[in-house]
Image (tube, rainbow, N blue to C red; front, top):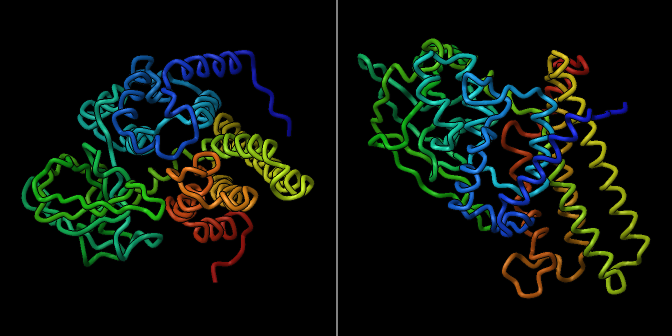
Length: 388
């Protein structure tokens, strides 16, 4: 398949690259892992995007976007990721809750939240996983009891990315404990300043504070903050997971790492493994990443053609996240004795980038549907294999 971009697409790519050269500080314009811990810097970049209406450019103009087509959005995401631009919570606000409110929200909910997302004023987190409900999300136990015009929430969420920065949380709760497993679930919008909410950090094995556990003790939420019908929130939750599917950002990030690794290996070839081994290992990973890019482009093409994307999204999710692990693992080994040194170590190669990736790239194969779950989808929906 030969993907050719139009002159308009290439002009957009050039415009985004020019903007990023000006908007990104030197800290973010590298693959140094510590840059993502600079929250103030992330917010400053978010404001720069908001000035151009680039926080959510694919949204309809009525909701603060520019009405971009799927391929334009893909190009934009690819360039931001390749340049090392910070996310600043956009994956949850722009990629998840915003489109869900456009589809399922009330007009009041859209007026209250969408403009504050596109202006960079509102940061969101996702309250899905629980200690006993991860891939099997329908087993969730966090309870929301109806009390007049309010729900009273009690329970716990875990692995809540960015909860320590978030203004709001979209979450799924059980509103009918006697209903069948996938029923009796409602979808709520919760102000993180509400009394009774406690956020505790979870520092990952790379030393970054990305995840949190969140406790809810008699947290009162207006019924008006429910999205969709009571006890029918499972379908709203699944709609949310249908957005942001191409994974082109992961592929672009992989490309940046491969280029930096290649440059390092060229300069150190005399002291590392035999040159042919270095070249062949790097070429294998480079070709695999090019395959991932084409898979991502195909998804954008399918979406722009009005085709449903389901199995294809699972394929690229498994491929891109597992390839990121392969690149990090190979890079650590190819760098020789210094490959395992973490950021901050004086002799760390590439600032410890690949050692950090080696630890950090475990979680992407688990969150947003683990590789095992994605393979089940590919098997049953794509290949027609039986469930049992």
